[in-house]
Amino acid sequence: MQVNETLKDGLKRGYNVTITADELNAKVTEKLEEARPSVEMKGFRKGRVPMALLKKQFGPRLLGEAMQEAVDGAMSSHFEQTGDRPAMQPKVEMANRDWKEGDDVEVSLSYEALPDIPDLDASTLSLERLVVTADDDSVQETLQTLADNAKNYETKKGGKAAKGDQIVLDFEGKIDGEPFEGGKAEDFPLVLGSGSFIPGFEDQLIGAKKGETPDVTVNFPDDYQAPNLAGKEAVFSCTVKEVKKPVAAALDDELAKKYGAEDLDALKAQIAERLSAEYAQAARAVMKRNLLDRLDETISFELPPSLVDAEANQIAHQLWHEEHPDVQGHDHPQITPTDEHRKLAERRVRLGLLLAEVGRKAEIRVTDAEMTQAVMNQARQYPGQERQFFEFVQKNEQVRQQLQAPIFEDKVVDHIFAQADVTERSVTKDELKAAVDALDEDEAEAATA
Image 1: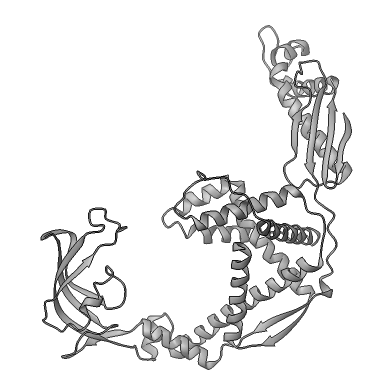
Image 2: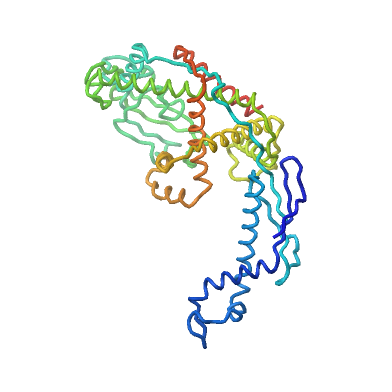
């Protein structure tokens, strides 16, 4: 095998690889020798068929396989000797397209090598972790929200229905005087202002009293899910059977039991624990962004153009579809990335390569248990089809990589946090929320710029 360099420009590499006919013939012979003991042929005992006959019978069939193995072996040997790691799948093409059996095989190999990435000394990084304590006021506020969600409705004697009240009513809808399917109900509990019905329906019932029989006239939206009703005017004959006012649940042990806690103190403890976890997660997101911003500003190296192009195209394509949600698939005009798309792509590629290198050197791995948990979390989005989703993931390497990538990134980030100089600063929950909101605004601006 001969390897001759044809291109070395930045990270771009090109080589001509020659695999001699003798090397190919030797590989075919090797494969035939391996299979020979089990080959049967008329006139010969099993395992005693002459090599010449084996080559005539099976040689052409094995030649393509031997050629592929030779090319793969040549590439593997080349990368081992040079230390190059391709940024994307190398491009391999036959150079002598008029090749015929007995000729040497000439292959052109081209790729972009991953750059040399500077070592990261995480101990030199100074980071700040925001700390929010789940105080009594926050716990009480959440507890009150739970009580509001668990509210009951009690009869509102002699009163008019107001927004937030619940009315119990019978109704029948008609279009042009004719009833339509799904337009009738009895003893239906409707909270005014909940937006459960067609726009305008609930508003016309505000002020109604028990025993009244108002007619409610509404127009179905043009995009209503039932085409036979879309855009049409309907009149609902209603009978108000009861008007109820909301009554918040008492903050007691009974409320706690509704939410699965033993008593009110236990529920408060659960709320405090959940709030602390939410605050810590939000604070981690802020610290992670600050870390990535710092790395992006201070560490620089040459980026493989192919990776940047691919990322920029993906960003532009994704944003285009977000702006045109009605367009499904890829039947749309050519989408050209902007300078801002490329700038964002360069940041993502740079940080991705850097974190991957830190993780490689630290021998960070995503465990089978972590992958299983990630697949289970994703499978919950497909109730009743969890098994099919598991099988789909098992057969799809790209999906597994998509699930694995964020887990790996978070483990690398935690590895850096553990080595960095991290100081803590106590803030209020409003200050933490403002910091998180700032992250979202930055992402939106970067994406739409």
